[in-house]
Length: 111
Image (cartoon, rainbow, N blue to C red):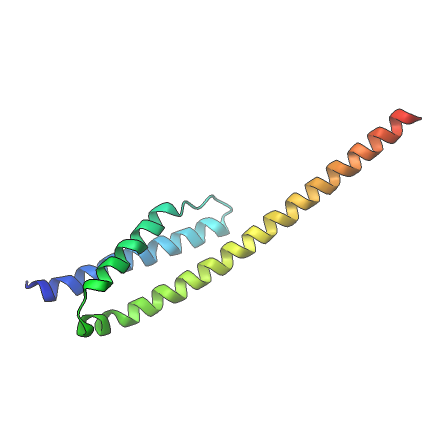
């Protein structure tokens, strides 16, 4: 296989793996698990480097997959922001409960 034929195929395979990582991360978020983003970040950086070496024709060939990547990342980002907001609300609730408990404890001591 010539490099021109191999490169887009390898790029597509790598991109599909990244899409799979994103979907796995989304499932982890839904299950309340911790999502490690460093592997995803480095794989996306590698894809960007590979994309820079593709010819215009090769880029056109992989454009639908890149559009999928953009969409998946957008959805993943939205889901992560929702989870972050939920965690912040929970922490505020814990903080408010702790403040109330401390206030009640102080009031009980002063009686």
